[in-house]
Length: 474
Ligand code: MN
Image (cartoon, rainbow, N blue to C red; front, side, top):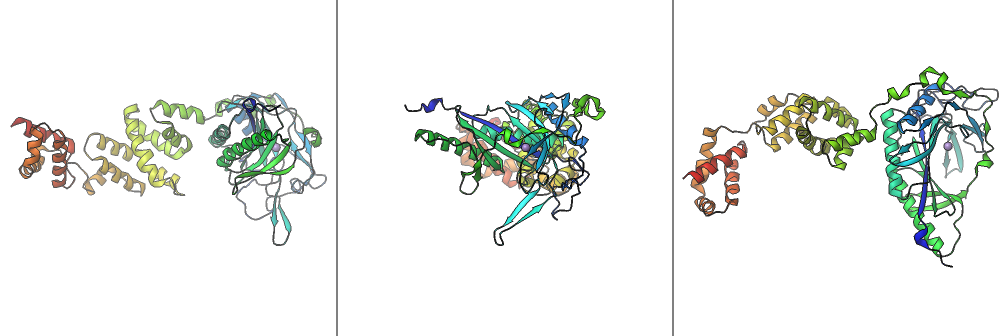
Protein backbone atom coordinates (compact mmCIF):
# COMPACT_ATOMS: atom_id res chain seq x y z
CA UNK A 1 0.00 0.00 0.00
CA UNK A 2 1.46 3.41 -0.92
CA UNK A 3 2.40 5.72 1.94
CA UNK A 4 0.24 8.82 2.20
CA UNK A 5 2.98 11.45 2.21
CA UNK A 6 0.65 14.26 3.20
CA UNK A 7 0.45 12.61 6.62
CA UNK A 8 4.21 12.62 7.06
CA UNK A 9 4.60 15.89 8.86
CA UNK A 10 8.23 16.55 9.86
CA UNK A 11 8.87 16.31 13.58
CA UNK A 12 12.03 18.11 14.65
CA UNK A 13 13.68 18.49 18.02
CA UNK A 14 16.87 20.41 18.78
CA UNK A 15 19.69 19.82 21.21
CA UNK A 16 21.79 22.89 21.83
CA UNK A 17 25.09 22.84 23.72
CA UNK A 18 26.61 26.13 24.87
CA UNK A 19 29.93 26.69 26.64
CA UNK A 20 29.36 28.92 29.64
CA UNK A 21 31.51 32.04 29.98
CA UNK A 22 32.76 31.29 33.51
CA UNK A 23 36.27 32.15 34.73
CA UNK A 24 37.08 28.55 35.63
CA UNK A 25 36.04 25.08 34.51
CA UNK A 26 33.03 23.08 35.73
CA UNK A 27 34.74 20.88 38.31
CA UNK A 28 38.21 22.37 38.86
CA UNK A 29 39.97 25.72 39.03
CA UNK A 30 41.66 25.51 35.61
CA UNK A 31 40.96 28.60 33.49
CA UNK A 32 38.09 28.53 31.06
CA UNK A 33 39.47 30.54 28.14
CA UNK A 34 37.97 29.79 24.71
CA UNK A 35 40.55 32.06 23.05
CA UNK A 36 43.63 30.23 24.36
CA UNK A 37 45.53 29.10 21.27
CA UNK A 38 48.38 27.14 22.92
CA UNK A 39 47.25 23.54 23.51
CA UNK A 40 47.06 21.95 26.97
CA UNK A 41 47.77 25.14 28.93
CA UNK A 42 44.59 25.37 30.98
CA UNK A 43 44.72 21.92 32.50
CA UNK A 44 45.15 20.30 35.92
CA UNK A 45 45.00 16.77 37.36
CA UNK A 46 41.20 17.02 37.70
CA UNK A 47 40.36 17.90 34.08
CA UNK A 48 43.08 15.53 32.86
CA UNK A 49 41.30 12.75 34.81
CA UNK A 50 44.25 11.69 36.93
CA UNK A 51 43.27 8.86 39.30
CA UNK A 52 42.34 9.94 42.79
CA UNK A 53 41.31 13.51 41.90
CA UNK A 54 37.92 14.82 42.94
CA UNK A 55 35.57 17.25 41.16
CA UNK A 56 34.13 20.37 42.87
CA UNK A 57 30.96 22.03 41.48
CA UNK A 58 31.38 25.51 39.93
CA UNK A 59 28.67 27.59 41.63
CA UNK A 60 28.73 30.28 38.95
CA UNK A 61 27.98 27.71 36.21
CA UNK A 62 24.93 26.48 38.15
CA UNK A 63 23.85 30.08 38.71
CA UNK A 64 24.04 30.86 34.98
CA UNK A 65 21.95 27.83 34.00
CA UNK A 66 19.34 28.78 36.61
CA UNK A 67 19.14 32.31 35.17
CA UNK A 68 18.67 30.87 31.67
CA UNK A 69 15.95 28.61 33.09
CA UNK A 70 14.13 31.54 34.65
CA UNK A 71 14.42 33.60 31.46
CA UNK A 72 12.73 30.88 29.37
CA UNK A 73 10.00 30.41 31.97
CA UNK A 74 11.13 26.92 32.94
CA UNK A 75 10.63 25.21 36.30
CA UNK A 76 13.74 25.30 38.47
CA UNK A 77 14.55 22.01 40.20
CA UNK A 78 14.59 22.10 43.98
CA UNK A 79 16.61 18.88 43.97
CA UNK A 80 19.26 18.12 41.38
CA UNK A 81 22.20 15.79 40.96
CA UNK A 82 24.93 14.96 38.48
CA UNK A 83 25.26 11.62 36.72
CA UNK A 84 28.00 9.74 34.94
CA UNK A 85 27.44 9.18 31.23
CA UNK A 86 29.82 6.42 30.25
CA UNK A 87 31.37 6.21 26.84
CA UNK A 88 34.80 5.59 25.42
CA UNK A 89 36.46 8.22 23.26
CA UNK A 90 39.96 9.74 23.38
CA UNK A 91 38.63 13.26 24.07
CA UNK A 92 37.07 12.08 27.35
CA UNK A 93 39.91 10.59 29.40
CA UNK A 94 37.77 9.64 32.42
CA UNK A 95 35.78 7.28 30.20
CA UNK A 96 32.63 9.14 31.24
CA UNK A 97 31.20 12.63 31.09
CA UNK A 98 29.70 14.19 34.19
CA UNK A 99 26.23 15.25 33.07
CA UNK A 100 22.68 15.31 34.42
CA UNK A 101 20.12 12.66 33.58
CA UNK A 102 17.20 12.17 35.92
CA UNK A 103 17.27 15.52 37.72
CA UNK A 104 18.10 18.37 35.32
CA UNK A 105 18.38 21.90 36.72
CA UNK A 106 15.48 23.14 34.59
CA UNK A 107 12.39 21.53 33.08
CA UNK A 108 10.02 23.10 30.53
CA UNK A 109 9.97 26.68 29.31
CA UNK A 110 9.77 28.07 25.78
CA UNK A 111 12.02 29.90 23.34
CA UNK A 112 10.49 31.47 20.20
CA UNK A 113 7.22 29.53 20.80
CA UNK A 114 9.16 26.23 20.86
CA UNK A 115 8.48 24.16 23.99
CA UNK A 116 11.57 23.01 25.86
CA UNK A 117 11.97 19.65 27.55
CA UNK A 118 14.89 20.49 29.82
CA UNK A 119 18.11 22.38 30.39
CA UNK A 120 20.96 20.71 32.24
CA UNK A 121 24.60 21.22 33.06
CA UNK A 122 27.53 19.02 32.05
CA UNK A 123 31.20 19.26 31.10
CA UNK A 124 32.75 19.69 27.68
CA UNK A 125 35.24 17.25 26.17
CA UNK A 126 38.78 17.87 24.95
CA UNK A 127 39.22 18.69 21.28
CA UNK A 128 40.79 16.31 18.77
CA UNK A 129 42.47 17.36 15.57
CA UNK A 130 43.60 15.03 12.82
CA UNK A 131 46.55 15.59 10.55
CA UNK A 132 45.77 13.93 7.22
CA UNK A 133 49.41 14.27 6.07
CA UNK A 134 51.01 12.34 8.91
CA UNK A 135 47.94 10.35 9.95
CA UNK A 136 48.45 11.60 13.51
CA UNK A 137 45.72 12.71 15.89
CA UNK A 138 46.39 15.43 18.44
CA UNK A 139 44.41 16.21 21.55
CA UNK A 140 44.02 19.48 23.39
CA UNK A 141 42.51 19.37 26.90
CA UNK A 142 42.02 23.16 27.29
CA UNK A 143 38.32 22.61 26.60
CA UNK A 144 38.01 19.45 28.72
CA UNK A 145 35.80 20.18 31.70
CA UNK A 146 34.50 23.55 30.48
CA UNK A 147 30.93 24.08 31.77
CA UNK A 148 28.43 23.14 29.12
CA UNK A 149 24.74 23.95 29.14
CA UNK A 150 22.57 21.50 27.24
CA UNK A 151 19.09 22.50 26.12
CA UNK A 152 16.66 19.93 24.67
CA UNK A 153 13.45 20.97 22.93
CA UNK A 154 10.28 18.98 22.57
CA UNK A 155 9.92 17.46 19.07
CA UNK A 156 7.54 20.23 17.99
CA UNK A 157 9.50 22.10 15.32
CA UNK A 158 8.18 21.69 11.78
CA UNK A 159 10.80 23.23 9.51
CA UNK A 160 14.44 24.20 9.16
CA UNK A 161 13.62 27.90 9.24
CA UNK A 162 11.64 27.54 12.46
CA UNK A 163 14.56 25.63 14.00
CA UNK A 164 17.03 28.33 12.94
CA UNK A 165 14.78 31.09 14.34
CA UNK A 166 14.60 29.28 17.70
CA UNK A 167 18.37 28.79 17.80
CA UNK A 168 18.89 32.48 16.96
CA UNK A 169 16.71 33.62 19.83
CA UNK A 170 18.47 31.26 22.21
CA UNK A 171 21.87 32.62 21.16
CA UNK A 172 20.58 36.16 21.81
CA UNK A 173 19.34 35.10 25.24
CA UNK A 174 22.72 33.58 26.19
CA UNK A 175 24.43 36.82 25.18
CA UNK A 176 21.92 39.09 26.94
CA UNK A 177 22.46 37.10 30.13
CA UNK A 178 26.24 37.02 29.70
CA UNK A 179 25.97 33.24 30.09
CA UNK A 180 27.91 32.39 26.92
CA UNK A 181 29.60 34.12 23.98
CA UNK A 182 27.69 31.53 21.95
CA UNK A 183 29.66 32.00 18.72
CA UNK A 184 28.64 29.09 16.54
CA UNK A 185 31.68 29.33 14.26
CA UNK A 186 33.90 28.95 17.33
CA UNK A 187 31.95 25.98 18.62
CA UNK A 188 30.81 27.92 21.70
CA UNK A 189 27.24 27.06 20.71
CA UNK A 190 26.56 23.79 18.87
CA UNK A 191 23.24 22.66 17.45
CA UNK A 192 22.07 19.13 16.72
CA UNK A 193 18.73 18.27 15.18
CA UNK A 194 16.59 15.15 15.47
CA UNK A 195 14.33 14.69 12.49
CA UNK A 196 11.64 12.18 11.68
CA UNK A 197 8.66 12.09 9.38
CA UNK A 198 5.37 11.27 11.03
CA UNK A 199 6.24 8.83 13.77
CA UNK A 200 9.06 7.32 11.74
CA UNK A 201 12.70 6.65 12.59
CA UNK A 202 14.63 9.45 14.22
CA UNK A 203 17.75 10.68 12.45
CA UNK A 204 20.19 12.95 14.25
CA UNK A 205 22.28 15.57 12.42
CA UNK A 206 25.42 16.77 14.19
CA UNK A 207 27.99 19.52 13.56
CA UNK A 208 25.65 22.32 12.53
CA UNK A 209 28.01 25.28 12.83
CA UNK A 210 25.81 28.11 11.62
CA UNK A 211 22.14 29.07 11.53
CA UNK A 212 22.25 28.64 7.79
CA UNK A 213 23.51 25.07 8.23
CA UNK A 214 20.70 24.38 10.73
CA UNK A 215 18.11 25.58 8.24
CA UNK A 216 19.57 23.92 5.16
CA UNK A 217 20.53 20.59 6.76
CA UNK A 218 17.03 20.11 8.18
CA UNK A 219 15.40 21.02 4.87
CA UNK A 220 17.72 18.57 3.08
CA UNK A 221 17.01 15.80 5.57
CA UNK A 222 13.23 16.23 5.29
CA UNK A 223 13.59 15.93 1.53
CA UNK A 224 15.92 12.91 1.77
CA UNK A 225 13.61 11.01 4.13
CA UNK A 226 10.55 11.87 2.05
CA UNK A 227 12.17 10.52 -1.13
CA UNK A 228 13.35 7.39 0.69
CA UNK A 229 9.81 6.72 1.89
CA UNK A 230 8.42 7.32 -1.58
CA UNK A 231 10.80 4.70 -2.94
CA UNK A 232 9.76 2.30 -0.20
CA UNK A 233 13.19 2.39 1.45
CA UNK A 234 13.77 2.12 5.18
CA UNK A 235 15.10 5.23 6.94
CA UNK A 236 17.84 4.06 9.32
CA UNK A 237 18.14 5.33 12.88
CA UNK A 238 21.55 6.93 12.70
CA UNK A 239 23.70 9.99 13.27
CA UNK A 240 24.46 12.01 10.16
CA UNK A 241 26.88 14.85 9.51
CA UNK A 242 26.32 17.97 7.40
CA UNK A 243 28.66 18.71 4.51
CA UNK A 244 28.61 22.51 4.20
CA UNK A 245 30.24 22.49 0.79
CA UNK A 246 28.13 19.85 -0.93
CA UNK A 247 25.08 20.80 1.16
CA UNK A 248 24.16 17.19 1.90
CA UNK A 249 23.88 15.10 5.06
CA UNK A 250 25.99 11.93 5.24
CA UNK A 251 25.89 8.83 7.44
CA UNK A 252 28.29 8.86 10.40
CA UNK A 253 27.32 6.10 12.81
CA UNK A 254 24.46 4.10 14.24
CA UNK A 255 22.90 5.96 17.12
CA UNK A 256 23.47 4.87 20.71
CA UNK A 257 20.43 4.75 22.95
CA UNK A 258 20.36 5.97 26.53
CA UNK A 259 20.97 2.58 28.13
CA UNK A 260 24.31 2.28 26.30
CA UNK A 261 25.55 5.22 28.37
CA UNK A 262 24.91 3.37 31.65
CA UNK A 263 23.96 6.56 33.48
CA UNK A 264 24.26 6.47 37.28
CA UNK A 265 24.52 9.14 39.99
CA UNK A 266 28.00 10.67 40.23
CA UNK A 267 29.38 9.33 43.55
CA UNK A 268 32.03 12.05 43.83
CA UNK A 269 29.55 14.95 43.91
CA UNK A 270 26.83 15.75 46.42
CA UNK A 271 23.19 16.05 45.29
CA UNK A 272 22.12 19.69 45.42
CA UNK A 273 19.20 21.49 47.00
CA UNK A 274 19.00 24.72 45.05
CA UNK A 275 17.15 26.68 47.73
CA UNK A 276 19.81 26.00 50.31
CA UNK A 277 22.44 28.00 48.45
CA UNK A 278 21.99 31.78 48.86
CA UNK A 279 23.50 32.77 45.49
CA UNK A 280 21.10 30.46 43.65
CA UNK A 281 17.98 32.05 45.11
CA UNK A 282 16.04 35.10 43.89
CA UNK A 283 17.80 35.16 40.55
CA UNK A 284 14.78 36.53 38.67
CA UNK A 285 15.73 39.98 39.96
CA UNK A 286 19.12 39.70 38.24
CA UNK A 287 17.67 39.19 34.75
CA UNK A 288 18.12 42.02 32.23
CA UNK A 289 15.51 42.95 29.64
CA UNK A 290 15.17 39.80 27.50
CA UNK A 291 15.63 39.83 23.72
CA UNK A 292 11.97 39.12 22.95
CA UNK A 293 10.83 41.87 25.32
CA UNK A 294 13.19 44.32 23.66
CA UNK A 295 11.94 43.22 20.22
CA UNK A 296 8.33 43.97 21.24
CA UNK A 297 9.39 47.34 22.64
CA UNK A 298 11.07 48.39 19.38
CA UNK A 299 8.14 47.14 17.30
CA UNK A 300 5.99 49.29 19.57
CA UNK A 301 8.03 52.33 18.53
CA UNK A 302 6.75 51.73 14.99
CA UNK A 303 9.87 50.09 13.56
CA UNK A 304 9.56 47.38 10.90
CA UNK A 305 10.61 43.88 12.05
CA UNK A 306 13.98 43.99 10.25
CA UNK A 307 14.72 47.45 11.70
CA UNK A 308 13.77 46.34 15.22
CA UNK A 309 16.04 43.31 14.81
CA UNK A 310 19.08 45.53 14.18
CA UNK A 311 18.62 46.99 17.67
CA UNK A 312 17.79 43.63 19.26
CA UNK A 313 21.05 42.14 17.97
CA UNK A 314 23.34 45.16 18.52
CA UNK A 315 23.69 46.36 22.09
CA UNK A 316 25.88 49.35 21.25
CA UNK A 317 23.52 50.63 18.57
CA UNK A 318 20.49 50.16 20.82
CA UNK A 319 22.32 51.99 23.61
CA UNK A 320 23.04 54.94 21.38
CA UNK A 321 19.44 54.93 20.18
CA UNK A 322 18.08 54.93 23.71
CA UNK A 323 20.32 57.72 24.97
CA UNK A 324 19.54 59.86 21.92
CA UNK A 325 15.87 59.09 22.42
CA UNK A 326 16.07 60.44 25.97
CA UNK A 327 17.71 63.63 24.70
CA UNK A 328 14.84 64.17 22.28
CA UNK A 329 12.01 63.53 24.72
CA UNK A 330 11.14 59.90 23.92
CA UNK A 331 8.20 60.07 21.56
CA UNK A 332 7.51 57.90 18.53
CA UNK A 333 7.85 60.67 15.95
CA UNK A 334 11.37 61.59 17.03
CA UNK A 335 12.16 57.88 17.37
CA UNK A 336 11.30 57.46 13.72
CA UNK A 337 13.71 60.29 12.84
CA UNK A 338 16.54 58.88 14.96
CA UNK A 339 15.87 55.45 13.51
CA UNK A 340 16.12 56.76 9.94
CA UNK A 341 19.63 58.02 10.55
CA UNK A 342 20.77 55.20 12.82
CA UNK A 343 19.76 52.06 10.96
CA UNK A 344 20.44 53.36 7.46
CA UNK A 345 23.26 55.92 7.46
CA UNK A 346 25.16 55.27 10.64
CA UNK A 347 24.82 51.50 10.85
CA UNK A 348 25.41 51.20 7.11
CA UNK A 349 28.76 52.92 7.53
CA UNK A 350 30.08 50.79 10.37
CA UNK A 351 28.29 47.44 10.52
CA UNK A 352 31.08 45.53 8.79
CA UNK A 353 33.87 47.06 10.84
CA UNK A 354 35.53 45.09 13.63
CA UNK A 355 35.60 48.27 15.74
CA UNK A 356 31.90 49.12 15.23
CA UNK A 357 31.13 48.85 18.95
CA UNK A 358 34.00 51.18 19.82
CA UNK A 359 32.91 53.65 17.15
CA UNK A 360 29.33 53.66 18.43
CA UNK A 361 30.39 54.14 22.02
CA UNK A 362 32.32 57.29 21.06
CA UNK A 363 29.39 59.03 19.39
CA UNK A 364 27.80 61.46 21.83
CA UNK A 365 24.01 61.05 22.02
CA UNK A 366 23.70 64.85 22.42
CA UNK A 367 25.39 65.34 19.04
CA UNK A 368 23.16 62.83 17.33
CA UNK A 369 20.10 64.44 18.93
CA UNK A 370 21.30 67.83 17.65
CA UNK A 371 21.60 66.46 14.09
CA UNK A 372 18.08 65.04 14.23
CA UNK A 373 16.73 68.33 15.59
CA UNK A 374 18.50 70.51 13.00
CA UNK A 375 17.22 68.32 10.17
CA UNK A 376 13.67 68.24 11.56
CA UNK A 377 13.63 72.05 11.81
CA UNK A 378 14.91 72.50 8.26
CA UNK A 379 18.11 74.15 9.48
CA UNK A 380 20.14 71.56 7.63
CA UNK A 381 19.08 69.32 4.73
CA UNK A 382 18.81 65.55 5.05
CA UNK A 383 21.95 65.40 2.90
CA UNK A 384 23.63 67.71 5.44
CA UNK A 385 22.48 65.46 8.30
CA UNK A 386 24.06 62.48 6.57
CA UNK A 387 27.32 64.39 6.17
CA UNK A 388 27.31 65.27 9.87
CA UNK A 389 26.74 61.64 10.85
CA UNK A 390 29.72 60.61 8.74
CA UNK A 391 31.80 63.12 10.71
CA UNK A 392 30.48 61.86 14.06
CA UNK A 393 31.43 58.31 13.03
CA UNK A 394 35.06 59.35 12.50
CA UNK A 395 35.17 60.82 16.00
CA UNK A 396 34.25 64.49 15.44
CA UNK A 397 32.10 66.16 18.10
CA UNK A 398 29.81 69.18 18.48
CA UNK A 399 27.25 68.82 15.69
CA UNK A 400 26.31 72.51 15.55
CA UNK A 401 29.89 73.73 15.24
CA UNK A 402 30.41 71.10 12.54
CA UNK A 403 27.33 72.33 10.65
CA UNK A 404 28.93 75.81 10.62
CA UNK A 405 32.42 74.71 9.66
CA UNK A 406 31.06 72.48 6.90
CA UNK A 407 28.71 75.22 5.63
CA UNK A 408 25.65 73.06 6.08
CA UNK A 409 23.19 75.61 7.43
CA UNK A 410 20.29 76.01 5.06
CA UNK A 411 19.39 79.58 4.16
CA UNK A 412 15.83 80.32 5.14
CA UNK A 413 16.17 84.09 5.27
CA UNK A 414 13.63 85.46 2.78
CA UNK A 415 15.56 88.53 1.60
CA UNK A 416 18.58 86.33 0.94
CA UNK A 417 16.53 83.73 -0.95
CA UNK A 418 14.52 86.31 -2.90
CA UNK A 419 17.42 87.02 -5.25
CA UNK A 420 17.58 83.34 -6.29
CA UNK A 421 13.81 83.32 -6.83
CA UNK A 422 13.93 86.49 -8.97
CA UNK A 423 16.76 85.14 -11.10
CA UNK A 424 15.00 81.80 -11.72
CA UNK A 425 11.77 83.52 -12.77
CA UNK A 426 13.69 85.67 -15.28
CA UNK A 427 15.70 82.77 -16.68
CA UNK A 428 12.80 80.32 -17.20
CA UNK A 429 9.81 82.20 -18.66
CA UNK A 430 8.50 79.08 -20.43
CA UNK A 431 8.38 77.08 -17.19
CA UNK A 432 6.69 79.99 -15.46
CA UNK A 433 4.07 79.96 -18.21
CA UNK A 434 3.62 76.20 -17.74
CA UNK A 435 3.02 76.69 -14.05
CA UNK A 436 0.47 79.41 -14.67
CA UNK A 437 -1.22 77.11 -17.20
CA UNK A 438 -1.75 74.61 -14.35
CA UNK A 439 1.29 72.36 -14.63
CA UNK A 440 2.12 71.96 -10.93
CA UNK A 441 5.34 69.96 -11.52
CA UNK A 442 6.86 73.13 -12.99
CA UNK A 443 7.25 74.40 -9.44
CA UNK A 444 9.54 71.51 -8.54
CA UNK A 445 11.76 72.37 -11.49
CA UNK A 446 11.99 76.01 -10.42
CA UNK A 447 12.81 75.03 -6.81
CA UNK A 448 15.56 72.79 -8.18
CA UNK A 449 17.02 75.60 -10.27
CA UNK A 450 16.96 78.01 -7.32
CA UNK A 451 18.67 75.36 -5.13
CA UNK A 452 21.37 75.14 -7.78
CA UNK A 453 21.88 78.90 -7.76
CA UNK A 454 22.27 78.80 -3.97
CA UNK A 455 24.86 76.02 -4.31
CA UNK A 456 22.64 73.78 -2.22
CA UNK A 457 22.55 76.12 0.77
CA UNK A 458 18.92 77.18 0.51
CA UNK A 459 16.10 75.58 2.43
CA UNK A 460 13.93 74.02 -0.31
CA UNK A 461 10.68 74.48 1.66
CA UNK A 462 11.41 78.18 2.08
CA UNK A 463 12.20 78.49 -1.65
CA UNK A 464 8.99 76.74 -2.65
CA UNK A 465 6.99 79.09 -0.47
CA UNK A 466 8.61 82.19 -1.95
CA UNK A 467 8.19 80.92 -5.51
CA UNK A 468 4.51 80.12 -4.96
CA UNK A 469 3.90 83.57 -3.55
CA UNK A 470 5.68 85.20 -6.49
CA UNK A 471 3.87 83.08 -9.12
CA UNK A 472 0.38 83.09 -7.63
CA UNK A 473 0.49 86.71 -6.46
CA UNK A 474 1.08 88.37 -9.84
MN1 MN B 1 25.37 16.72 26.00
